[in-house]
Length: 50
Image (tube, rainbow, N blue to C red):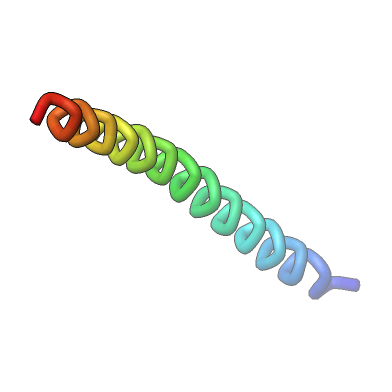
């Protein structure tokens, strides 16, 4: 019973780490997609003007 706190701590640390990485990648990806769509829109506007 005395060692269960160790595994609880390790599990909590892994869950927190995984959640942090997941949120970071989701936010970074959303900004990347927004920038990509903006660039595609600008390229489309330039192509239509030519």
